[in-house]
Structure formats: C-alpha cells, structure tokens
Image (cartoon, rainbow, N blue to C red; front, side, top):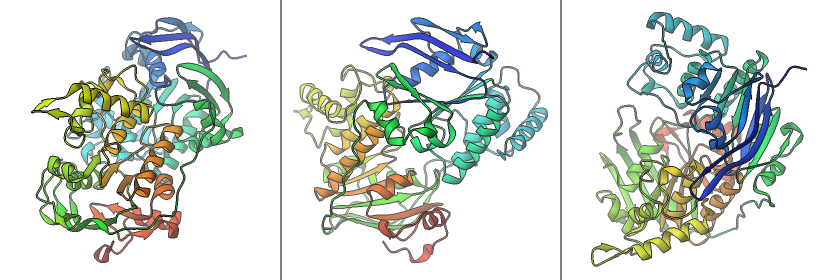
Length: 505
C-alpha cells in the first residue's frame, strides 16, 4: 500500500496557562481533502502552524512522505512541498498581482516570465486572473486567487487552507471548490479548515475533530450530518437560536441620502444611502466584500464624516458627532477587522474592555481608570460569551480569531446599546459560538433594541433578520421582508439588479 503523505503522532504544544494541542495524531493520504474541525480555541491554528514551520512542537513527531519532518520556518515547509493560504490575506494593495506573488517566492523569475506562469496556472485551474492588475482593485474572491496561485506555483504536495470561503460569494465558492477538486484529482492533498459544515460535507473526504486541544475522533463528512459534526466539536447538544414574534416600536435610527468618501484608496464610497431601523427590529445588510460595508459602519459609528445626508438617533441629528459622543447616546458598533480596529492587538483583554466601555460602563473615577471595575467587566464578557482564555490579562492578539470575535461582540452587547451596528458578527467562529452570538442579537431585539447586521453569510441573515437590504458599489437597495426572500432574489440584489433610485427603507 502507498504510505500516507503526512502522519502526525502525539503532537503537543503548550503555552503559559493553556495546552493548545495534547497528543494529537492524524494521517493525511495522497490526493485527499482532509477537514480539520473544532471550536474556536480547539487548537486547529496551532496544529497547522506546526506543520507549516511557524511553531515548534513540544513533543511528538511528523513524517512527510515516509521521512521525518520538522520544519523550523515556513520556507523549510515550502521547500518540502507544503503551502498555506491564510484566513487573512497578506497582500499589498498598491502592487500588481505579479509583484505580490514575486514577494512570496524564494527566487522569483523575471516579471515577464512570472506573468506567463501566472496566466498558465490560472487557466489550468480555472482561476482567471490578470497578472498586471493592481491588487487593491480586486474583489475579495480575486485576492484569494492571488494567494492560491502563489501557492500553486510552488507545486505543493499539501495545501493548507484556513477559512477560505469566509469572504466569498456562493458563485466564488463554486469556482474555488472546482479548483480544489482538480488539485485533488491531480494528486495534491488539501488540509481544509472551516466552520461551514455543509461545505465540509460537499468537499471533504475525511474530517478530524479537535476539542480543547485533543483529537476526539474522525468521520466521513458526506455520511455525517452538519449537526452531528457540530455536536462532536462541542461535546454537547447544539441549540438553534430561537426567534420570537415581537412588536416593532418607533424608528430609532434613521439615515437619509447619506454619502461619504472612503478613507482607503481602494475603498468604496457610500452613495445616497437611506435606511431606517425600529426598536425591536434587526435589519440585515448583505453584500460581496468590498462594496462599502466598512464605510457604512464607519459612517454610522462616526469614524468618518459624511459629505451629504442625515443620520438621526431618536429624532436627534447625530451626523456631526464623533464616535465617543454617539456611543454615549447609545449607538455602538463592532467592526469586521478584529485586530487593529475592534481591538488593540498588544493590549490585554481588560484594557480593550476599557477602551470601548469606559463611558457606558462608568469605568473611570475622578478622571482615572477604575481597574477593579474594568477587571470585573472583562471577566463578565469572558464568562457570558465563553471566551477561551486563561485570564483577562492575555493580549488580544494571543486569542484565536473566533474567541476574539466573541469578546468584541460581547463587549458591545453587554453595554446595553439602543442601536448596535455589527459587521460580520460570526466571522470565523464555530457553530456553537455562532448560535450563541445570533441568539444574543435576537435577545437584544426582543428587549426593544435596534440592530443592524452587516454580513456576507446569507444563512445568517435569513435566520435572524426581519428585513434585508443589499449593498452594491456603495449603494443600498430598498429593503425586503426577509420572509419574502428567495436565493435567486438575493443573488440579483447582491449583483446590483435593483432600482437604486427608488430605495425606500
């Protein structure tokens, strides 16, 4: 029999106060799509970092193609035939596709020859991409193609993919899966990390499940339901969010004819956006990444000033107010970018709790930070939203993406806002945590609060929202009751096929 491509035996890695992986073993066959599943903080990222040479295991061994394998840096892993596409793209927006790819190569060829290689590989695997295009002008799906092609030019034996569909449209997911199946059929193995369990069922041959750093079992995804996989991940029964009929109150957030320029050279300016949200209502805003989502949240939170239009809260004009003043009045927000925007990476969780909640939670006394009260608030967030961390002194950057997301969203919800605007509330979180966050948003609406959910997860929007709008090239469509939506209608709206001049929400 042909030996497996990669065998991990007893891999263990500990950090101060936490065991990230404990005696983890798994096997990846040649030409196999192998899923790695687990809750946030289960140890998935640490495991793949050991395979890719970013982290050194404390114990255990790896065998690649029958030979001992212990990469001390990513370049050693790449030389051995392992490539990785990270969840967060590492691209320079001002450079071309070819220039970005060259930066990731040990010995790049001349630019003309590299452009020819890029075109050949992109045609071969159905990933159309112009090597001369500036990356800042690309969609999220096209940027991911840059990352994938950069890996494919290495002719990898194993391709590791971390949450590859989190910013893709359904059509782009189909293209990606077709590419991955071609790679599999050509003999490349794929280690695939995702919280989207139906995608796992559609794509993957085998799944290994981690729970709190331990391997708790394997399964064949196509023979296992998404619920069964989710319950294996969390070790308990999974509860779906509960929707209740609730009366709608008066309009609390009203936006009319809002226009605002993006602060980013490659961003999308808002154009004549109008929306309204009532007490006890969740408004969903969908759209392909890069169509003005970040700018809309920034305009509503006060981070960018508007060129034209009106923003009112309970009938009061707040369009001229900065973020701190809007937060004091009850409009809170949780942006998509966790590190650097929603949280200061090198500050502790306690300090990050203070940055956002100092005013609404009264965390100061006589002009000084009340660290005792702040510590209690940080611990409340950690407990209420099941943030997996040793303590509140851990730096934000040390948390897994999903656990930091739970902390950021929980920090805002527990401040009891009148209006909450949240962008990608469950991005990168596991099924159990996603259900908990969605339930918390539903509970807010049940309590008479107004919620705006900006998301690329259509299932999420269909599950929890009352009305739906589509954002396309900075313009917002008219709203449609979520109960009247079909997948076909959503697709048309996301593509901009609606009457933008008569938007009335």
